[in-house]
Amino acid sequence: MTTHVMTQTTSSAAAQRSAARPAGHHSAPAPAGNGMDGALPTGANHILHAHVLGRAVRGLQATYAALEPDLIRSTVNTAYRELDRTARLKTFLPTLAIREAEDRLRRLAAGPAERDAATQAVAAAA
Image (cartoon, rainbow, N blue to C red; front, top):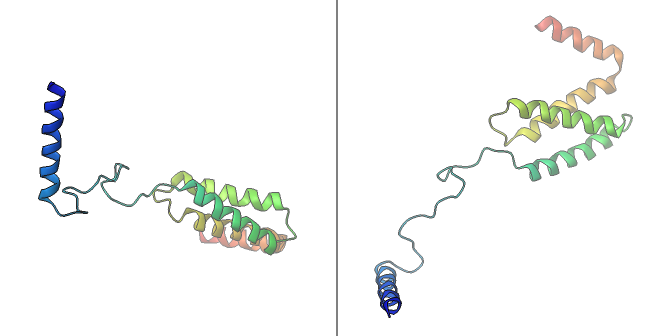
């Protein structure tokens, strides 16, 4: 019998709360659930990053057909891992890694003379 009384009290309290506010509005915003208090996440979205990197590898393989496909894939993955180690904001990580990988592949495809010139220019700047 006590359960019946508690159920009636609980249901009437719930009815009073829902009558006090307009339909469709909540009294307090729902928590984000990610511990960030509604801020945008800055972590890596690994599924999206893998998709973007995969598309970039296919595009670079078409551009640099003279190079081995495994070399292109490993260059992109290496550039991504190197940047990922120190990145605080991971949103644009795939774009930056693709750019870095493309620079490396361009130097590899250019041949030894241009690679040596690029290396000397970097050494002179440092």
